[in-house]
Length: 495
Ligand SMILES: NC(=O)C1=CN([C@@H]2O[C@H](COP(=O)(O)OP(=O)(O)OC[C@H]3O[C@@H](n4cnc5c(N)ncnc54)[C@H](O)[C@@H]3O)[C@@H](O)[C@H]2O)C=CC1
Ligand SMILES: O=C(O)/C=C/C=C(\O)C(=O)O
Image (cartoon, rainbow, N blue to C red; front, side, top):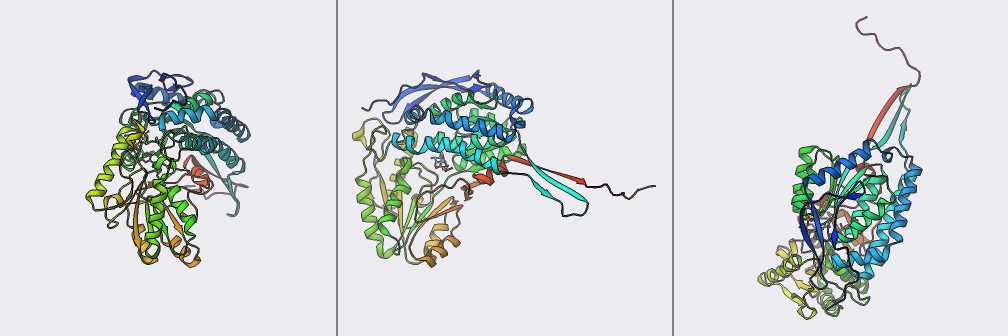
C-alpha cells in the first residue's frame, strides 16, 4: 500500500578489514514494517566469520596506527566520520526507515544528526582530556595515563540502530580501541552502510561488522577470547546472558537495558506541557524506547481530566506511512514484536484494565505492523502492564494521592532507567528527584539527552553508564607510573 522509500541492497554482508565477510550462515529475510514486504536478505556470519572480524580488529589494535595515533590526528578522523554521515543523511535515513519503520521525519532531523554528533561529541571530549599528575608525596612523581583497552564488541538493538550504535562506535574509537559491531539482525541496513562509509576514513580493521542472530553471531562475538570489552544495548534477559559470558571471560561490560519508567504528573504542573510531554514520552520512536515514560502516574484531582485529554489526543494521532511527513506514529519494527504488544492488550483486558483508547491492530492500514495508540488505566501497579516492559505505543495510567505514594509506586518496579516529574512546585520537585530510584530524572521536559552526563539505569535497567566521563572510564585502562624525582638511597636488605 505504501511505496518503499529506497531500494536497499539485495544482500547485506558483514565487513572484515574492509572486505566482505565470509558469512558462512544462512540468509535471513529483512522486512519493511510499513507493508510487511521482504526487502533484502542478510547473510549471517557464523563463528568463523566472527573470529575473522575479531582477529582483524586485534591486528588493527596490536599492529595498526589507530591506538597510538596522536589525539589531534584521531580527532581529525572522527571529524571525517561525522562528515561522512552528514553527507549521507538522506540515504541513511531512508535505509533506516525501510528496516525499522521509524518516521523519516524523525530519522532525518534527530537520529542521523545525533549519529553525526556522537562523533563530534567524542572528538571534543578527547580534545580536553588529560592524564593526572600527583607530586604531593615528597620526592616522587606519579602520573596516571589512560590507555585504550583493546577490541570492543558492540551489540546494538533494533529500536534506533544508527543513533545508538554510533554512540558506541564513536566512544570506542575515540579512546583508541578497535571494534566489531553487531547490529540487530532485524534492522541491519543503515548500519551496514554507515560501516561501509566509515571504511573510507578509518585505517583497515579498526571497525568491522558482523551480522546475524543474537544466539548465533552475537553469542560467538561476546564469547570470543579476543574480545576485551562488551557494550550492549537491548533487552534485560539478553543482558543477563551476555553479562554471564563477560563474567566468565573477566571482560568489562556495560548494559543498557529495558525500562518501565514512571512519568509522574502533579496537579501543580503546567498540565498542557505535561500532556505534550506524556504523549512524546510514550509515542516517540513508534513507542519503542527503553526510556519511554510508559507508566503515567497522575495526581488524583486531575486524573480524569488528564487521562481524558491524553486519550483524545492519542486517538487523533495520525498513524501510518513512516515516509509521510504528516505521520505521527509508524509501524512496530517486526511482526513478532507487534504480536507481543497486542498480547499485552489481551493481558490488560484479562487484568481488568480500563481502556481509554486503542488496544488493537490498525488493520485498515494493510499488512504493516501498525498498532493503534493505546492507553489503559491499570487496577494497580501490580498489573503486568504496569510491571513489564511493553516497548510499544501503550501507556499505563495509575492515580496517586500524595508525593509519598507516587514515589512508592514509581520505585515499585524491577527497572530504574529514567523517571519524569511534572510540577511547578519546587519542594515537590526536590522531594521527587531525591527519592526516585532511576538513573536519569527529567523534570518538566521529555527526554533531554545531555551526552556529557551519565546515562544508564538502576536495577534491571542496566549496569554501567554511557556518556562523556563514563565512556572514558569504560573504554580505557588506567596506567599508574611512579618515579622518584631524585633517587634517594633505599634500605639495603641483606647487606
Ligand atoms: N534499547 C533497549 O533497551 C531495547 C530493549 N529491548 C527490549 O527487549 C525486548 C526483546 O527484544 P529483542 O529483539 O529480543 O532484543 P535483544 O536484546 O534480543 O536484541 C538486542 C541485540 O542483542 C543481540 N543478541 C541477542 N541475543 C544475544 C546473545 N545471546 N549474545 C549476544 N548478542 C545477542 C541481538 O541480535 C541484537 O543485536 C523488547 O521487546 C524490548 O522490551 C529491545 C531492544 C532494545
Ligand atoms: O543514548 C541515548 O541517548 C538513548 C538511549 C536510548 C535507548 O537505548 C533506547 O531507547 O533504547
